[in-house]
Structures are given as structure tokens and as C-alpha cells.
Length: 212
Image (tube, rainbow, N blue to C red; front, side, top):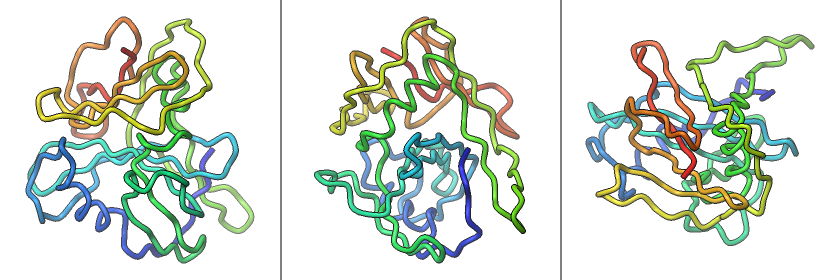
């Protein structure tokens, strides 16, 4: 489960992405345009230390882009090239936001979703000492491959997406390669396992990630 906080963020996540996204090789949309949120999902860090959230966004009238992020309370050593920016969180203090594809916490969680349909974390607020669950903004469906889910080591040096490969970033955990689809569209799920998602207005599931 993912505990959320009713907090003010400076800059906001979308403001942060507005400056970061146009520099990505897989970016599509209007540089300098307002970035809008389409949907999102979270994974749960078993250690409870790192926030792991994937945002589906648009820049202007551009296509949907998938941006997995991790949020940390201190800089991740050796990951400067994957830093998206620093956010001041009114409850948690300073948070370092990283492209999750370059954070070793992310690949094992993605592998569990792709290979074993582990699903997304349930999000909730603490209100008056009680849990208030926030409804999911999208539906996730993974494969049940029967394959053991690797736990590590995971790569913190992803193979970046290129302009001719459909916007795929490859991460590795153990002996498994996982492709993160940066510009997700409806597509057939490979027999090796995949993760699809849908949300209001997108009834046909799009392919978010798959095992290679």
C-alpha cells in the first residue's frame, strides 16, 4: 500500500516534467507546452523508503507518454544523469525525483507486475487516524507467466530509448530484460509477458511494458 500526503509540492510534478521531457530522445509533443496528467499508478517499495510512481502525461496535444519516477529523501549515489529534479514537499521535505528506469528499486517491482501480475499499490490517506483509500485512476493487467520473478541485481544503467525503436527503454533485473514503452499504444502482449493498462477514455488497453 502507498501512503499519500495532502501536501504542497514546489515545483509540482507536472511543472518538473515540463522542463525535463523535451530533452528525452523519446519525447513527442509540444516543447514548452503545458504537461497534463492522464492517469497514474504506483508500486510499493518493500523497504518503504522510496516512492515509486508512474505518470501517464501529455505535452500539449501530443501523445500519451509514460514516465516512471522514484522519489527519494536523499540523492541516489551515481545516478545524477537520471535525476529529473528536486521537489520541496510540504510534509516530507526535500525529495529527489529520478527517472525510475535508472533507479535499482524499480526493475524488480516492474518484473513482478509484468511476469506475475503483481498489480499496483493501493493508495490511501490517513484522515483522523483512519485510512481513506483513493480510487485507482487506471487499471493494470500483467501476465501470469509462471516464471520466477527475479529480485536482483538490477541495472541502474538503462539502455535508452531511441527515435527508431518506438520509444522503448530497456532495464534489467537478474537475467530478465524489461522494455518500458515510453509512448504506449494498444499492442499485442508478447508471450514472454507484458503489462497493459487502461483508463477512462482509453478503453482498449495499451502496452506499458514487456519482457524481452
